[in-house]
Image (tube, rainbow, N blue to C red):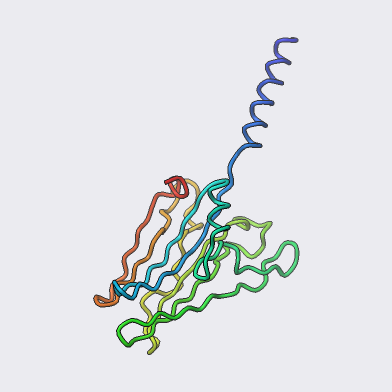
Length: 175
């Protein structure tokens, strides 16, 4: 009986020390107006622990932490979600880029309530949409079949094409 108690104590100690040292995922979204190559690039990055802290510590004016756009209505409810509006002028045409947070559920105590991703849109000055409210993660697929995560969107302006780079959700933040 004493051996079983010792085994349980050792197992719980290992379990709790592992949980205490578990890393947390930090996500950042970035926007770049690449006039030389005539591209608009939106990147979605993630990193665990201290590397994630560095993502937020070294932000520029065109980088935001996921969650930066969220304001709380009360302790359990997401209120307003702000939007960053950017302009990129290439070849005598201005493009409007909007970046925001996209909470899966405004009730943070509800299903997927703690799940927040980012969303982005790209329009030209005439209102033509090239990318409309694209979310980088899809929380509706469920854990059995997690959807890939978009890590980069490149709008090739001369060709008017959008290219997506994706990774499997279990590889996001670890590469």
